[in-house]
Each structure stands twice: as structure tokens, then as C-alpha cells.
Length: 583
Image (tube, rainbow, N blue to C red):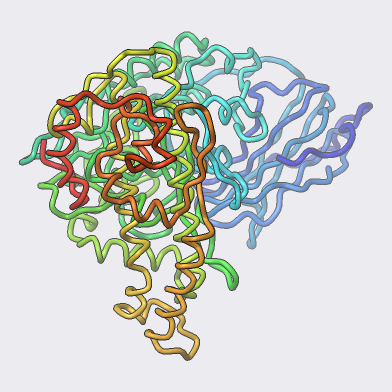
């Protein structure tokens, strides 16, 4: 957020008489933080609109003057403007958000440090838009920046990002857990938002599914304690711990036509894919949309998402085939983009609507099972057209894919190092390795520090990257060829690829702590070694595919037990074919 210079009217007079605010447009709202504004302290303001862009935001101070604002713009949809004031003067303020055709939202606000009457919160279109805008602001980092954190804590405790930080003014954010893993992250963020705003929240206990059927869930557990006004951090901790102990990788992978679920599938249209929408891949990984970056003359568009790993690390990733896996042969399991199933209030009761009702009336997006009818090729083509409505410049397409791959590799560097840190703390300990498909889904240190799912996605990413020059020849209609033939462009991309592979590199720490530089060309050459490089019982050199007898390998001091190595050889075919086994 940008701060306003100076002090807001230290000796402010009463604001001149104004007519009361008119009705707010459907799906629009103005929000303030903290919940009770205090004279002499800063005030955060966010205007959000689900349906029309917001052009400007104005704040009228108690002395009748308009404050100079430089709000940060995001979206949309939804569209949002956010600003942080300097020290607020005591008195009455008016905040107004305007669109092309007039006022979108208006709020009369008293800054007096007094109490605010509590009333049960309600999920409606405006609240869903606020949740989406809050998610976008939380993870809005510079595009050129690699976003990786050891946990959610550095993001959630940053007042410049978290609009709801210290919302109750009680230091509550210093007393909560911030360690969601992959499947937990969407639920954690939803629960945190519900806690701060005073909303109900729902979650279900689900099976993990099997080879012949998707996960199935029980009845919804509706937590309504947050609706009874500001509740202490201890209650949030109790609720979110129970949620995280209940949900797992199958919770978002439920069948597309199943109504007894926490999420429901939505159409592949930009107006429905808001920040906060989740993506469930067919093998259990979950991401959450964080930001859309429009296509421009000098830059391809991007769809950015965030995810968590079993070691609780958080990272930002861009949409491409290497990170958003899609399959059409998973026997009814529901991969794809999904929204939280809304909680509707009828008088005092809270109910969870089914798919039939959501087909005709939904707060964000209607129910649609269209993703279940798509082949992977069609899915990626449809998403490509959403992200880049204009034809792609081939070089820009390559550079975007290259940057996404490097982000993936840097994330793996951190993940493998986390495993090494565990080993250093537990010298001589051997992490038990599960058998069969359980290597991808288990609990304990293996889940936290092994990397089979991440390595399979990396192998897929390497394969996709190597196929891009051929894609120009196979699908020339997707690219702006600038008068050249597809074969000429292919040759140019192959030359560019050779340059990048030799120039780009990562650096990891070997077993003795020394840095080792690994070129991208070497990573590509080690794809076969990476098929069995996910075991944290192996030394870090083996996990990066170093060959026996090389200088790089010379610092290796430990290996996985022989029985684990034998099983990894048995499972190698899964990684070679980039296909998870049935449960």
C-alpha cells in the first residue's frame, strides 16, 4: 500500500452536512482496517467491485477537504483500489468509489475509537469479491521477483500486504499458527478471512478415492463461531487446526458432478476465474489463483497462483503445463479450476447449495462440468487463449516458459535443502519410505521432505520445454510468426534454447556445505537420474543427479537403504511416463 504524506487534519472541524450515502452497487463494497478506526493512527481502505471497474477513490476528511490519494489498483474482476492514510483525525469521513457511470460504493465512517456493533456476517457477492481482492493483494509481488517463503507467516504478518493484519487491534496475528501445507492452504486462507470478517466456514471429511472412483465426502461441518463478533486467536487456532487435521489432497479432487463437496467446478472463462479460485490437479496437488497479468505488446499475459508444500513452504507459480497438471483419464476424479461452495444464509440458518442450484444462481461463477469433457490439449489451448487472447510472439512464449521452469527449479533447491536441514538435525536417522502409490501421499517426515510429486512435475516441465519449437510447426495458428515460416521460427527457437541452456544455472549446497553450480543443460541431461532423486535419505548430490566418480559426487556421504533404492527402481516407470499410479 502507498502511504499518504503528513497528518490528516490534526485540528479537524466537523464535516459539513452531506446527504447520506446512496445505495451501493451489487457486488461492491468499501472496507476499512482496523475494524475500529482509532484517532491518530493510520487507516487502511479498500474499495472492491465485482461487476464494474472502479475509476477513482475519494476520501472527504472531517474538515471538508478531500485527501490526496494514490491508491493501488488491482483486478479484475473483481476490481479493487487500496490505500493507507496517514494518522486519521477524529471525526466523520466519507469514502466514495466511482466508476464510469457514477458512484459504485459509498461509506460514511466515524473515527472515534468507539465500539462497533457486532452482527453475524454473511457470504454474498460483495464479500466474495472482497475475499478475492484480499487474496490478490496478499500475494501481489513484483513480477520479476521469485516468491518463495518458508511458511505463510512472512506474508500474513506483513501489514502492507495483509489488509486484515491486526484487524481487531489486539495483536491477534502474533498468536496464531501459520503452517498450512498443500491441501490446507485454501482452507487456511478461507478460515482466516472468515475469522476476521465474522463469517461461517464449512469443510468436510473426505476419502482419498481409489483407482476406480474419486474421493467422496461426508456432511458439511459448518463452523459458525466466528459470526459471534471478534473472537480470540485461540478460537481461530482451534478451528483451523481441526480443519487442517480433516482435509487432505483428496478434498479438492472430488468428482465434478458431486454436490457433497467443499468446491465445485466452474466454467473456463476469465470473468469466473477470480483470485481465490483453486486448481486441483489430478494427482492431489492444489494451487490457488493469485493474480491475472494482462497480455501487452511487449509481454505475454500470465496467470499466477500460489501453493504450499508438505514442508509448509509457500511459493508463487505461473500457469503452464509444467505446474498445472491436467489429465482426462483419472476415472471420475475432478481435476481443474473450482470455487469454494458458498454458504447461503436464510434467516438464522446456514445451508450449502448443490450443483443444480449453483447452475442457475451463484455468487461468483455458475456450476459447470465442462472441464470434464476436455482433453489435456483442449484444456491447455482454452487456458492459453484466456491468458493471451492475441497470438503469442514465439520468443516471448519461450522466455515465459523459461522463467517458469527456472522458478520451478529454484523451488526444488529450497525443498531439497529443507530435507538436508532435517537430516543435519537427526544424524543417522533413516526416514521410512512408504510402498507403492503411497510415496506420493503419506504423512510424517517422508511427506515433508521427499519430492516425488514435485519431481514428476519437474520432469513434465522439462519435457514441455523441449517440445516448444515443434509446437510452432504443429500449431502455427497460435503464434505471431511475423512473416516467417514455422520452420524458420523453429530454428530460431532452437538456437535461443541452446543459448539459454548453457547460460542459465542453479546453485545448491553439497553435503559438505560447498556451493555447486548446475547448468540448465545439465539438468536436462539428468532427466533419467531425476526419476529416482526424490528420496531424502539420499545425499543432496544424488538428489540432483550427480554421477558416481565425478567431482560433484565426491562429497556424498549417505545413501538410501538398499530396499528403498530397489523400490525406487521399480517405480521409475511412473516418472519416465509422467503418470501417477492408481491407488
